[in-house]
Length: 130
Image (tube, rainbow, N blue to C red; front, side):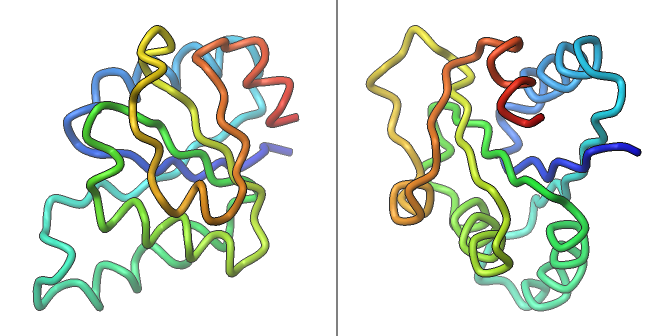
């Protein structure tokens, strides 16, 4: 049975997100990734509809992973996804997409919810996911 992981990220990091998916699946074929790429502003009139589409994906996942790039900490959508996952009792982790950039800011929701922050070490990440 596949282990479902919800990925939270910003659109600017999409190329690295696809690379992460590929590397993780190569290490563990039973991993399944879900996300909802949002291009709509968080405070738009479509926000309620979008949240309604995202909630079931987070509920179906056993883990929520936030892929942390240079702008991730500024995303209201990322913060909302992390907070919702925490409310649902999901395991949380942040993964630095640029492990060499220790100064990259972590989204506030990850800090508030005491999520584990990992560098991009696919073996360690896949072990943590289980």
